[in-house]
Image 1 (cartoon, rainbow, N blue to C red):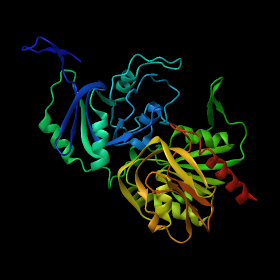
Image 2 (image 1 turned 180 degrees about the vertical axis):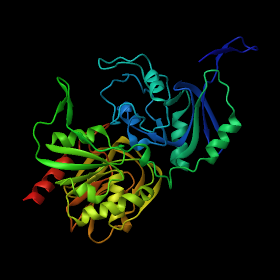
Image 3 (image 1 turned 90 degrees about the horizontal axis):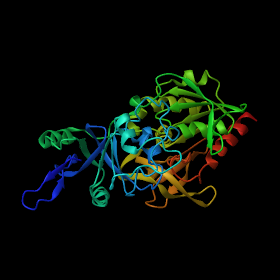
Image 4 (image 1 turned 90 degrees about the vertical axis):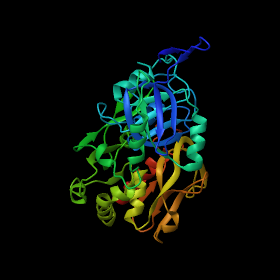
Length: 396
């Protein structure tokens, strides 16, 4: 930030080099960092205190501007291991990040560079020095906001143009964002989970073949499948059921992803229906959960503020246990629309929204939360074992 001199007092006043312009017209000023420029998106808030690098590289955040409620984001810097986007050279789609305080120089043995430098390299605009508590309260009361985030080192902004751009953006409701984050071609995955003494490993042997349909998949989901002994073949979101079945999978995984599930479902749901009809064991997460629900006749709905954080309590009705999980979704399955052959397996204890289903007549289940724990607690890792058990029973 470049200082300016107040003529009346002689004090040095910092120039605001960043601004968030809401579609309703309000301009909230702060200080820009990261990439220079402007981007339009939907502003959400995330309550996680750790895992900001995983969050900012999660393709499920495509089209969104993430506001962190925890004030000290960036303290441990960034590294090359905590990226969740499969293609390291490709953007995850997140439009911007808002934090309360500028980050200090990183202090962590894994850090390779500071947050701002990393954001600039990835083309993500940052904004700090504004009241994130007030912005979070606004979202909580009025819902997620369409807005433009901008960083100009000279502090000069064309607010009229930014207001018009924010007002004209149609929003994520009704938008299919999967094409911007799905894999362009089929590939295989054999990397397993990270260990402090050895880093990431490689799968040793294989028990089952899993075809993962990529709607914006995260690396750690694929790692946990490989860790469970699965040969993982990742295919683009538009891959047909015929092509998936031709790979002779023991199981099918439906990944997380961004956007409106009803729009993505226009081409994905017919494929999922064919896979379910073939009675291939199927496991879905996040967007994959929502589209499995759509495939069996349920409906999805836009949430006012969504669920974004790593501290969400969810009850698993199959075990009676409460888990603390990582969440990232702006749409939810309408539980009242679930057909008779579908059981609700998980429910949010924050607002009672649906967080999981299982089909009674086919080997298929899905959850709304992120059991791979990147970021977030590992309470739900058992779901990958549940998927493996389902494939073992189907094989037997």
